[in-house]
Length: 330
Image (cartoon, rainbow, N blue to C red; front, side, top):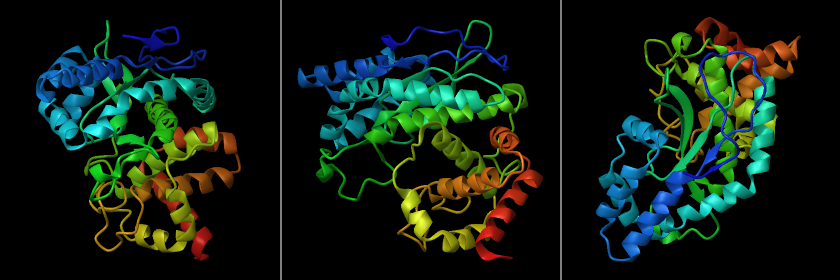
């Protein structure tokens, strides 16, 4: 597989370490391009995707296992939007063009983190179920963390054939947001490291250990830390958020103690009463909570460390309440 930058050793023995330029892997995109060429030569999409999946990286395999992605689901997605999928391999050139920006942003992000290292990123093509996510892949002594970025969820451009999206683009993002996704997902890796690594990681995504507020802060802090490191935001949901901040806070305050993902519209899906909300507006809400905490902290450096490590409900609620008071005065 082709990779950009010299490889560096990754371990999960978290601690302070010198920054190493990240690996950006494009082998899966290249294999997908080979599958497209096979289709053009007359091979069936299913057979071509079987070859693609067979040659795919361990990061792809881990992503596929998590999201139940298969050769059939990728072939079906291609058949539904062939023009869209045919343009995906060209994203390698775009990402490579912005590589220096990504490297600089990741170096700034790692410098802020109390522990951990940024990790390799694998760009792949899947079936439009999820975008970027950290995944575990086999290592010599123990599993390794990598970032898997399914570019098919982050590939809209001015040239996208919108006739292939008769019901709208849903939660798909623009190709220009790919660098932001790489940094955001690495922020999650550094959050994991700052909580003590895999053995001590506290999931906030299940009903037993999480809440809507916990998801907002985990994701919103990753968004805010990414913004501090790069100046990048994903899409333009912040424009809607800033124009409707008080109303959004009132809605979120009422559900923030509910189980994670139990109320649609904030992190996935559409809200039944607010079809106008941008996708994942809960990320923006978490961003606002984290930003307010950092900007009003007596010790901003300590606050940054908190943004990497906070997870306890008793620690999260004061952040949300302080942000709410700043809006309502009570």
